[in-house]
Image (cartoon, rainbow, N blue to C red):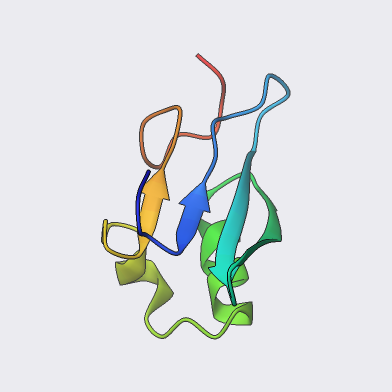
Amino acid sequence: MTSAPIVVHRPSPSRGRRGTVRSHGQDETLGTAYSDHDLVLFLEGAGVAEPEATLDDPQWVEWRGGHAHEFHAA
């Protein structure tokens, strides 16, 4: 398990990845992202400073069940 507060979950069979953020001890769903741009918008909405740089920072974001920046199921 990671301590990263933001998790990008495995790609769904119909494309897209669910994003969650841990806040006050609970996971909150940000939405389903179909691209990095979607994730950046979600992170901006959650108040993350410099969301583009945050996507590749493992202290902030954990990419689960697939390669980072890929939004389709293998």
